[in-house]
Length: 247
Ligand SMILES: Nc1ccn([C@@H]2O[C@H](COP(=O)(O)OP(=O)(O)OP(=O)(O)O)[C@@H](O)[C@H]2O)c(=O)n1
Ligand SMILES: C[C@](O)(CO)[C@H](O)COP(=O)(O)O
Image (cartoon, rainbow, N blue to C red; front, side):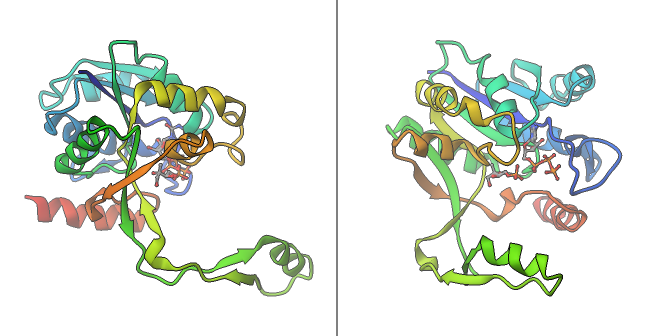
């Protein structure tokens, strides 16, 4: 039984807008990617780690992650692709037949707690081929018609979108990472979705989506607020507070 974690860290962080890739931005004195790697290692259920990195930064990322005493795991670093999906696919190529469970986790979710990692892996090991952590939706959600946006923009007016439906929020979940998979299932899902990987507007926004596209079941376990995604400066501030709370 071997679990490999792919830690995606190859994004640029355009919405954060710093002059270095988001995964290398500091939070409480350490890069986001290191926070995430430390918590994966601390879970005790990850046997090896593959980190996807921006082109040209493999050496720096290796030094940060593999050189850290808290990351007591074999670490490999691989160049990512142009989309998150392509980066995961690059990491997945390093998951040999000896690996039975693959976790996919975002460096952009640096504070995902070890207990969450264990919960996801346990659910996969209980026989679920694809598992995502999810939280209930607290806002009322509307589905809108995109065509209406185009019309409004063309008229140079205020953005008015037509609401199509109000889905029952009791049935909606906001999903996080790490997401966990039976290796063979994830390999099949990425192979089937490979033609989508190159373009941002086509690529899957999470790996479970590729499994769903195969018609295979995906299950949700309880997520954790601490696994929040860092997208903007405000998120970094909130994450800073969470780190203070942890200690
Ligand atoms: N080509 C890419 C794009 C994203 N990611 C990773 O996927 C995760 C989620 O992506 P996101 O939060 O969107 O990060 P960025 O793409 O870096 O951010 P932005 O969209 O603001 O540029 C991050 O850990 C990011 O490093 C990746 O490995 N390869
Ligand atoms: C995988 C993910 O973190 C699940 O919520 C999310 O979909 C990543 O999205 P992004 O568009 O790459 O930020």
